[in-house]
Image 1 (cartoon, rainbow, N blue to C red):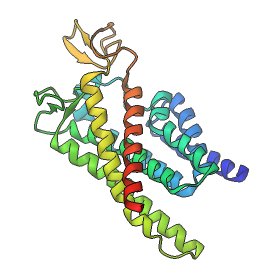
Image 2 (cartoon, rainbow, N blue to C red):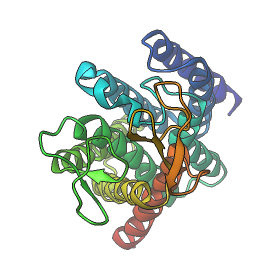
Image 3 (spheres, one colour):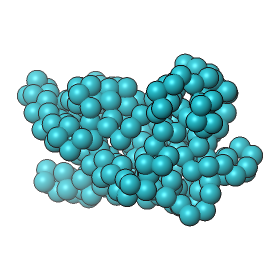
Length: 277
Protein backbone atom coordinates (compact mmCIF):
# COMPACT_ATOMS: atom_id res chain seq x y z
CA UNK A 1 0.00 0.00 0.00
CA UNK A 2 2.91 2.33 0.74
CA UNK A 3 4.21 1.83 -2.79
CA UNK A 4 0.79 2.69 -4.26
CA UNK A 5 0.62 5.85 -2.16
CA UNK A 6 4.06 6.88 -3.39
CA UNK A 7 2.98 6.35 -6.99
CA UNK A 8 -0.21 8.24 -6.21
CA UNK A 9 1.84 11.15 -4.88
CA UNK A 10 4.06 11.18 -7.97
CA UNK A 11 1.20 10.98 -10.48
CA UNK A 12 -1.01 13.49 -8.69
CA UNK A 13 1.97 15.81 -8.36
CA UNK A 14 2.63 15.62 -12.09
CA UNK A 15 -1.01 16.17 -13.02
CA UNK A 16 -1.47 18.91 -10.42
CA UNK A 17 1.73 20.61 -11.51
CA UNK A 18 0.53 20.61 -15.09
CA UNK A 19 -2.79 22.06 -13.94
CA UNK A 20 -1.00 24.82 -12.04
CA UNK A 21 1.19 25.58 -15.06
CA UNK A 22 -1.91 25.73 -17.27
CA UNK A 23 -3.54 28.07 -14.72
CA UNK A 24 -6.31 25.58 -13.95
CA UNK A 25 -5.22 25.44 -10.29
CA UNK A 26 -4.13 28.05 -7.78
CA UNK A 27 -1.28 27.31 -5.35
CA UNK A 28 -3.73 26.07 -2.71
CA UNK A 29 -5.63 24.17 -5.39
CA UNK A 30 -2.40 22.38 -6.30
CA UNK A 31 -2.01 21.29 -2.67
CA UNK A 32 -5.60 20.06 -2.60
CA UNK A 33 -5.23 18.21 -5.90
CA UNK A 34 -2.10 16.42 -4.69
CA UNK A 35 -3.75 15.42 -1.40
CA UNK A 36 -6.92 14.15 -3.04
CA UNK A 37 -5.08 12.53 -5.94
CA UNK A 38 -2.60 10.72 -3.69
CA UNK A 39 -5.37 9.18 -1.61
CA UNK A 40 -7.55 8.21 -4.57
CA UNK A 41 -4.67 6.81 -6.65
CA UNK A 42 -2.96 5.16 -3.71
CA UNK A 43 -5.97 3.61 -1.98
CA UNK A 44 -8.62 3.34 -4.69
CA UNK A 45 -6.33 2.11 -7.45
CA UNK A 46 -5.44 3.28 -10.93
CA UNK A 47 -9.01 2.97 -12.26
CA UNK A 48 -10.21 5.36 -9.57
CA UNK A 49 -7.25 7.65 -10.17
CA UNK A 50 -7.78 7.81 -13.93
CA UNK A 51 -11.44 8.69 -13.40
CA UNK A 52 -10.29 11.60 -11.25
CA UNK A 53 -7.94 12.68 -14.03
CA UNK A 54 -10.79 12.39 -16.54
CA UNK A 55 -12.82 14.83 -14.45
CA UNK A 56 -9.93 17.22 -13.94
CA UNK A 57 -8.77 17.31 -17.57
CA UNK A 58 -12.23 17.61 -19.13
CA UNK A 59 -13.52 20.19 -16.66
CA UNK A 60 -10.33 22.26 -16.86
CA UNK A 61 -10.50 22.31 -20.64
CA UNK A 62 -14.15 23.37 -20.59
CA UNK A 63 -13.43 26.14 -18.09
CA UNK A 64 -11.20 27.74 -20.74
CA UNK A 65 -13.53 26.96 -23.64
CA UNK A 66 -14.89 30.23 -25.08
CA UNK A 67 -13.53 31.99 -22.02
CA UNK A 68 -14.00 35.43 -23.55
CA UNK A 69 -17.74 34.82 -23.89
CA UNK A 70 -17.93 33.85 -20.21
CA UNK A 71 -16.14 36.91 -18.85
CA UNK A 72 -19.32 38.99 -18.82
CA UNK A 73 -20.81 36.77 -16.09
CA UNK A 74 -17.58 35.78 -14.29
CA UNK A 75 -18.31 38.07 -11.33
CA UNK A 76 -21.52 36.14 -10.59
CA UNK A 77 -19.55 33.10 -9.48
CA UNK A 78 -17.85 32.77 -6.12
CA UNK A 79 -14.47 31.93 -7.66
CA UNK A 80 -12.58 32.18 -10.90
CA UNK A 81 -11.46 29.51 -13.33
CA UNK A 82 -8.43 28.53 -11.18
CA UNK A 83 -9.57 25.96 -8.62
CA UNK A 84 -8.43 26.54 -5.05
CA UNK A 85 -8.11 24.23 -2.04
CA UNK A 86 -11.79 24.53 -1.13
CA UNK A 87 -12.89 23.54 -4.61
CA UNK A 88 -10.43 20.64 -4.75
CA UNK A 89 -11.75 19.25 -1.47
CA UNK A 90 -15.39 19.91 -2.38
CA UNK A 91 -15.01 18.07 -5.69
CA UNK A 92 -12.64 15.30 -4.63
CA UNK A 93 -12.79 15.07 -0.85
CA UNK A 94 -15.73 12.69 -0.71
CA UNK A 95 -14.13 10.55 -3.41
CA UNK A 96 -10.95 10.38 -1.32
CA UNK A 97 -12.97 9.29 1.73
CA UNK A 98 -14.57 6.53 -0.36
CA UNK A 99 -11.11 5.43 -1.52
CA UNK A 100 -10.04 5.06 2.13
CA UNK A 101 -13.14 2.95 2.83
CA UNK A 102 -12.49 0.89 -0.32
CA UNK A 103 -8.93 0.13 0.81
CA UNK A 104 -10.34 -1.24 4.07
CA UNK A 105 -13.23 -3.15 2.48
CA UNK A 106 -13.34 -3.26 -1.37
CA UNK A 107 -17.14 -3.53 -1.57
CA UNK A 108 -18.62 -2.95 -5.06
CA UNK A 109 -21.12 -0.43 -3.66
CA UNK A 110 -18.22 1.85 -2.71
CA UNK A 111 -17.18 1.96 -6.35
CA UNK A 112 -20.80 2.71 -7.26
CA UNK A 113 -20.76 5.61 -4.80
CA UNK A 114 -17.51 6.87 -6.32
CA UNK A 115 -19.05 6.76 -9.80
CA UNK A 116 -22.01 8.79 -8.53
CA UNK A 117 -19.72 11.33 -6.87
CA UNK A 118 -17.44 11.76 -9.88
CA UNK A 119 -20.41 11.71 -12.22
CA UNK A 120 -21.93 14.55 -10.22
CA UNK A 121 -18.88 16.81 -10.11
CA UNK A 122 -18.23 16.28 -13.82
CA UNK A 123 -21.89 16.73 -14.73
CA UNK A 124 -22.17 19.91 -12.66
CA UNK A 125 -18.97 21.39 -14.12
CA UNK A 126 -20.00 20.61 -17.69
CA UNK A 127 -23.49 22.01 -17.07
CA UNK A 128 -22.03 25.25 -15.71
CA UNK A 129 -19.32 25.73 -18.32
CA UNK A 130 -21.57 24.98 -21.30
CA UNK A 131 -24.94 26.03 -19.91
CA UNK A 132 -23.87 29.66 -19.55
CA UNK A 133 -23.31 29.72 -23.32
CA UNK A 134 -26.95 28.88 -24.05
CA UNK A 135 -28.74 31.30 -26.34
CA UNK A 136 -31.93 30.59 -24.40
CA UNK A 137 -32.07 32.35 -21.00
CA UNK A 138 -31.98 29.98 -18.02
CA UNK A 139 -34.97 29.43 -15.78
CA UNK A 140 -34.98 28.97 -12.03
CA UNK A 141 -35.31 25.28 -11.24
CA UNK A 142 -37.85 25.94 -8.49
CA UNK A 143 -40.29 28.35 -10.14
CA UNK A 144 -39.44 28.41 -13.84
CA UNK A 145 -38.83 32.15 -13.62
CA UNK A 146 -36.43 33.47 -16.26
CA UNK A 147 -33.11 34.56 -14.77
CA UNK A 148 -29.84 35.92 -16.13
CA UNK A 149 -27.07 33.62 -17.33
CA UNK A 150 -24.93 32.35 -14.48
CA UNK A 151 -27.59 32.88 -11.80
CA UNK A 152 -27.51 30.26 -9.03
CA UNK A 153 -30.28 27.71 -9.51
CA UNK A 154 -30.81 28.59 -13.16
CA UNK A 155 -31.01 25.71 -15.64
CA UNK A 156 -31.10 25.41 -19.43
CA UNK A 157 -31.64 22.49 -21.78
CA UNK A 158 -28.07 22.92 -23.01
CA UNK A 159 -26.80 22.69 -19.43
CA UNK A 160 -28.99 19.66 -18.73
CA UNK A 161 -27.69 17.71 -21.72
CA UNK A 162 -24.15 18.83 -20.92
CA UNK A 163 -24.52 17.35 -17.43
CA UNK A 164 -25.67 14.04 -18.93
CA UNK A 165 -22.67 14.03 -21.29
CA UNK A 166 -20.25 14.84 -18.46
CA UNK A 167 -21.56 12.03 -16.27
CA UNK A 168 -21.66 9.62 -19.22
CA UNK A 169 -17.97 10.25 -19.87
CA UNK A 170 -17.18 9.14 -16.31
CA UNK A 171 -19.32 6.00 -16.63
CA UNK A 172 -17.94 5.05 -20.04
CA UNK A 173 -14.36 5.54 -18.87
CA UNK A 174 -15.07 3.43 -15.77
CA UNK A 175 -16.36 0.57 -17.92
CA UNK A 176 -13.46 0.77 -20.37
CA UNK A 177 -10.81 0.99 -17.64
CA UNK A 178 -12.34 -1.83 -15.59
CA UNK A 179 -12.54 -4.15 -18.60
CA UNK A 180 -8.97 -3.28 -19.58
CA UNK A 181 -7.72 -4.02 -16.07
CA UNK A 182 -9.66 -7.28 -16.04
CA UNK A 183 -8.18 -8.39 -19.36
CA UNK A 184 -4.67 -7.52 -18.17
CA UNK A 185 -5.22 -9.67 -15.06
CA UNK A 186 -6.69 -12.43 -17.23
CA UNK A 187 -9.90 -12.57 -15.20
CA UNK A 188 -12.28 -12.13 -18.13
CA UNK A 189 -15.20 -9.80 -18.82
CA UNK A 190 -16.67 -8.00 -15.80
CA UNK A 191 -20.45 -8.14 -16.26
CA UNK A 192 -21.25 -5.59 -13.54
CA UNK A 193 -19.12 -2.97 -15.32
CA UNK A 194 -21.76 -2.73 -18.06
CA UNK A 195 -23.94 -0.84 -15.57
CA UNK A 196 -21.30 1.79 -14.75
CA UNK A 197 -22.53 4.37 -17.32
CA UNK A 198 -26.07 4.02 -15.95
CA UNK A 199 -24.86 4.55 -12.38
CA UNK A 200 -22.72 7.55 -13.30
CA UNK A 201 -25.42 9.25 -15.39
CA UNK A 202 -28.22 8.64 -12.88
CA UNK A 203 -26.12 9.69 -9.91
CA UNK A 204 -24.53 12.57 -11.79
CA UNK A 205 -27.82 13.97 -13.06
CA UNK A 206 -29.43 13.66 -9.62
CA UNK A 207 -26.49 15.36 -7.94
CA UNK A 208 -26.38 18.12 -10.54
CA UNK A 209 -30.09 18.84 -10.04
CA UNK A 210 -29.61 18.90 -6.25
CA UNK A 211 -26.82 21.44 -6.81
CA UNK A 212 -29.21 23.66 -8.79
CA UNK A 213 -31.96 23.22 -6.21
CA UNK A 214 -29.68 24.25 -3.35
CA UNK A 215 -28.42 27.16 -5.43
CA UNK A 216 -31.97 28.36 -5.97
CA UNK A 217 -33.07 28.04 -2.33
CA UNK A 218 -30.51 28.00 0.49
CA UNK A 219 -27.12 28.91 -0.98
CA UNK A 220 -25.89 32.31 0.14
CA UNK A 221 -26.53 34.88 -2.60
CA UNK A 222 -25.34 38.47 -2.32
CA UNK A 223 -26.09 41.80 -4.00
CA UNK A 224 -23.72 44.58 -4.99
CA UNK A 225 -25.57 47.88 -4.55
CA UNK A 226 -22.95 49.76 -6.53
CA UNK A 227 -23.08 47.49 -9.62
CA UNK A 228 -26.70 46.47 -9.03
CA UNK A 229 -25.88 42.80 -9.63
CA UNK A 230 -26.35 39.52 -7.77
CA UNK A 231 -23.30 37.42 -7.05
CA UNK A 232 -22.05 34.49 -4.96
CA UNK A 233 -19.21 36.66 -3.66
CA UNK A 234 -19.04 38.51 -0.37
CA UNK A 235 -16.75 41.00 -2.07
CA UNK A 236 -17.82 41.80 -5.63
CA UNK A 237 -15.48 42.07 -8.60
CA UNK A 238 -15.59 45.87 -8.22
CA UNK A 239 -13.95 45.52 -4.80
CA UNK A 240 -16.99 46.53 -2.74
CA UNK A 241 -18.60 44.38 -0.08
CA UNK A 242 -21.96 42.88 -0.92
CA UNK A 243 -25.00 42.19 1.24
CA UNK A 244 -26.77 38.88 1.75
CA UNK A 245 -30.14 38.83 -0.02
CA UNK A 246 -31.13 35.18 0.39
CA UNK A 247 -29.87 31.85 1.63
CA UNK A 248 -27.41 31.02 4.39
CA UNK A 249 -24.12 32.85 4.68
CA UNK A 250 -22.19 29.68 5.55
CA UNK A 251 -23.68 27.73 2.63
CA UNK A 252 -21.26 28.73 -0.10
CA UNK A 253 -20.61 27.09 -3.47
CA UNK A 254 -18.08 24.61 -2.05
CA UNK A 255 -20.56 23.33 0.54
CA UNK A 256 -23.25 23.05 -2.14
CA UNK A 257 -20.89 21.06 -4.37
CA UNK A 258 -20.02 18.71 -1.53
CA UNK A 259 -23.70 18.15 -0.67
CA UNK A 260 -24.58 17.58 -4.32
CA UNK A 261 -21.79 15.03 -4.79
CA UNK A 262 -23.02 13.19 -1.67
CA UNK A 263 -26.52 13.09 -3.15
CA UNK A 264 -25.15 11.77 -6.43
CA UNK A 265 -23.12 9.09 -4.68
CA UNK A 266 -26.10 7.97 -2.60
CA UNK A 267 -28.32 7.81 -5.69
CA UNK A 268 -25.79 5.62 -7.48
CA UNK A 269 -25.51 3.30 -4.48
CA UNK A 270 -29.28 2.79 -4.28
CA UNK A 271 -29.47 2.13 -8.02
CA UNK A 272 -26.50 -0.26 -7.90
CA UNK A 273 -28.09 -2.19 -5.04
CA UNK A 274 -31.29 -2.57 -7.07
CA UNK A 275 -29.48 -3.55 -10.29
CA UNK A 276 -26.90 -5.90 -8.80
CA UNK A 277 -29.28 -7.49 -6.30
